[in-house]
Each structure stands twice: as C-alpha cells, then as structure tokens.
Image (cartoon, rainbow, N blue to C red):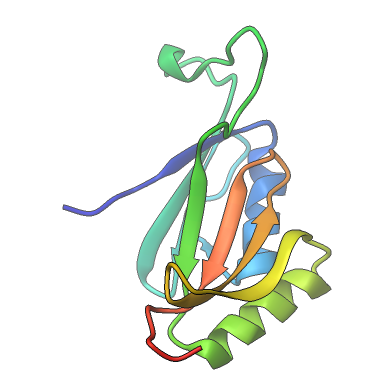
Length: 131
C-alpha cells in the first residue's frame, strides 16, 4: 500500500507551480481542478480544487480553514540534497517558518515551509545518529 496525500487548495495551478519551484516536483497531470505531482517516477502528491463539485466531501467548511493539524514531510536522500532543496525553496521565495536545524528527537535535519494554502511542509534528511 502507498500513501497518496491529496491537498484541497484554492488554486491548483498556482500550488502546483509552488511545489515544482520550491521542491523540484514535476507535474504529471496538470489543470485547474486536479494535479498529480511526481519526484522522478514516484507519485508523491495530489492537489484538488477545494470547490470542485465531483467530491462533495472536499468542500470547504464554514471557516474555510485548510491544513489544520496536517503536515507534509518530504525526506531527501541525504544532507547534500536536503541543503539543495532548502536553497531551491528559498530561491523560489517560499515562506520558511523554521530555518534548517538538527532535530535531536527525530535524529534528522529539518526545515519547515508554509505553502500558499497554509499547509505545513517539512523538508528533512533521513534518520541519522550523527548531527
């Protein structure tokens, strides 16, 4: 079984551009209502227009809040790739909520971003005993 997270967003094409420019993902579908994003050949994320009518369950609540209690963690291959992705996100103008740091509880390096819809996006290295 593979996890296929889907975010409900206000602007699918804008969010797709953000994930492509900040994390280096690529479009596998494209369009104003739905997107599939890939890392190489690996399908990693779906974006769906919040108000698209075919999935009534995805409609906005009364507050219109999205992402509360949700975070997406993108694990890089190593520290070098981690640093490159963080710099790519920075260069793309991503909002960096927490600068890169060593997390001693998780035993990895991590940096936290916020996407255009307010979802928390964490870039991290694999588990390591060494900071």
